[in-house]
Image (tube, rainbow, N blue to C red):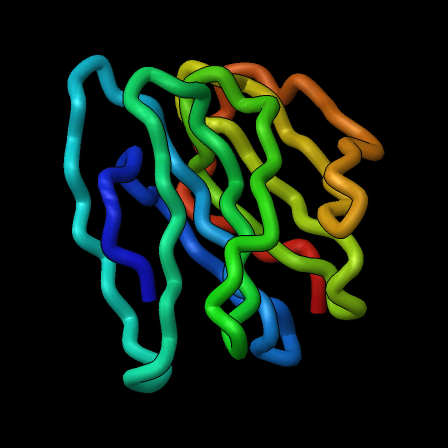
Length: 130
């Protein structure tokens, strides 16, 4: 799927139709290398170059073409959990333990449409859409 130097991936989710993959990162104090590979065929060229020391993001890929469609940045420490709305328009991201933020993204336009500070609530997994 992709094989590059990246921040550690803490969570992933797919859109309901399987066309998009969303992955949440966490920041690290050190340079880290994570090989994360999923093969959708020999011609797939999923690659995304990530730089050391940058803010963690929600990364977005087209699962058919392997194209990285972009990233959503707002969590200073990392992403603990992700969910996608049934219509695929919105992505919800919950920050890691030191973050305390929940964001709702219109991901195709790279816009945060709502956010909330959730305090020190520990979130391991969540499902908000059916």
